[in-house]
Image 1 (cartoon, rainbow, N blue to C red):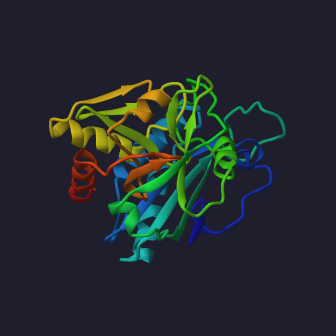
Image 2 (tube, rainbow, N blue to C red):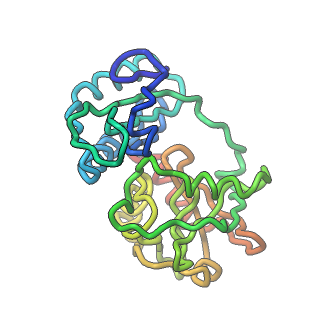
Image 3 (cartoon, one colour):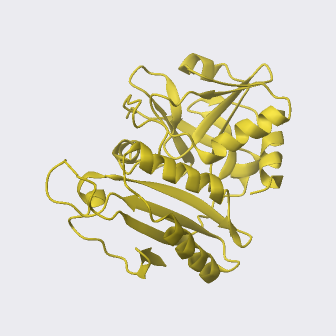
Length: 272
């Protein structure tokens, strides 16, 4: 199912700035058990991202009504809902006077199927050669410019490798191609700071909140490859996969530890 500005349609104008310049933002939402998970948090980030990019999005009510129609059509089916907002149609050139009506797109997709052992035994990761550019203006939000992730993900086609780790231009660990990353060291939880590069994921925020409530120390800080190599546990997360323990990064092995398992259970049981 695809709705573009509330109408059943799967085509946008060639003049849409989302197509021309990647001028827009998006959210990917897991739909399970008859509801979109963490919807409030996803919408808050979507609207905040529009504001940060000065996209004049005033169609919140329309978007919510269209989301309700999409969820009604899905019923109890597991799926993935993607919401995209672009700046809308415009003339050639980078300048936009924001007079155009933003384009809003809601699409539904089959929920991906992953091997069961990913959740229990962990996944294999690799380091990507493609880096993430440092840009504090764009850091944290899910803008449509995903070329770095596309290039990174296409560095491997080994089905045994579930995810790739991306670093910034200073060789500090930032995130996976599609996920946020956490490490455990001495019973404390650490995750890369994403104020200069990377995405401030919705599930990342939930993990930080759940850990803090449970008395687990959490710090957002610069994480080097050395710190990653010396970690006691590693896991990655996003809205669709939840939490995947990491069993190995290249030739370095990691156990599926207590804190990772605890947070998996806490995330599964929390109010979504």
